[in-house]
Image 1 (cartoon, helix red, strand yellow):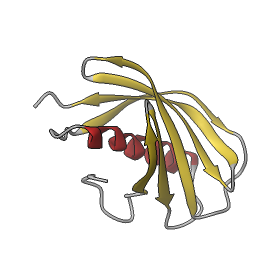
Image 2 (spheres, rainbow, N blue to C red):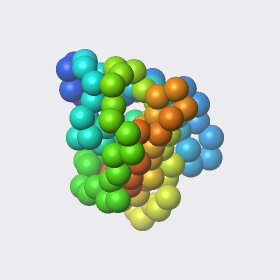
Image 3 (cartoon, one colour):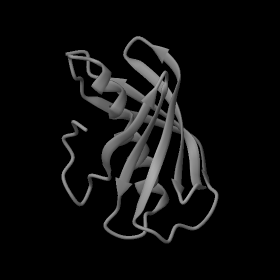
Length: 117
């Protein structure tokens, strides 16, 4: 994935699968993730949608909505399932779940704005 983030802030590693408006990305954390780290992992995973384009853009997390901590997290590797639910020009909304062993630990929606450059 093409991200400007470096460890220990880079959580998203690679796109495992991609179809239509859904991506599954692998994530690795330096320690058990917090809710904020899970949301950042989802935002970073949304960069997988930019891989579809030959003109990569920089995105900015602009909102979090309906964020839910379903279970306490005690792991360092997870996947993010993220789906584009709304697209309006340079703004996109995504719904996501952070999972480990097919169990959802965090769910919510994020909005990403792409840099117009």
